[in-house]
Amino acid sequence: MSIELIEINGQCEFFDYEKFKNTFESTIGRTCSDAKIFAFNNFPAAVSSETNIDLILVIALNPKKGNYYRFWKNERWVYLNNLILPINFANYLQNEEIKVEDNQIICNEEYIDYSTEINSLRFSFIDYLALKCGFNKQELFIQPVIFIKNSTSAILDNYIISEEFTFNSLNEYLQKNSFDIFISNKNWKTEIGYDNIADDIKKITEQASKDSEIGYLTKKKNR
Image 1 (cartoon, rainbow, N blue to C red):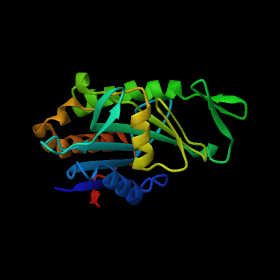
Image 2 (cartoon, one colour; image 1 turned 180 degrees about the vertical axis):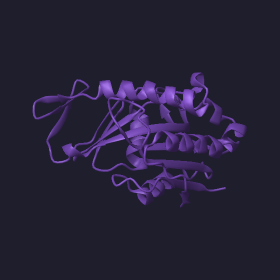
Image 3 (cartoon, rainbow, N blue to C red; image 1 turned 45 degrees about the horizontal axis):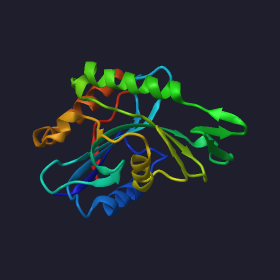
């Protein structure tokens, strides 16, 4: 039993792997000792015509009894079961003055709006997993995230604004957004499904390799 972080296709330059794993362990470690984190760097398949995917994080907690992470939200306990999180890093705004008013992100008197990209990526990636990787479309719930690097700190649905992306910032996002179910793949919520997660990840990796003109590294490095 352990918490593993598995890199796929090298490391994303915008993501601190060690810090993410350390903050993950320090946050959930009291009640969860068995989980897997897969980090797909620079996903090569043309999933959406609107935007690219810098990093896909797959986080799954073993659903066995006594292994869990939960927090209080909307007057009830909410459990983190598993996440499939396509992430786009918007680092070009790191030195700009950003403010959030009425659920709108404003920079230099202009609205920052990625809603078209978010919706395209959400539905296109679900279709990709279902049609090309053999996932059950009805069991998938995926919400992409735009991470805006900035000294301002704010959370909106599908947006994290922070100086760095760690599990602390992701945990804050989970607790403050409007969603209250964190099961990206219903099949992984069962012990049998969780035991087969490595095979599911292999399907994604192999399909991405087929769809990429330059190929996609399938070798995984365990931390």
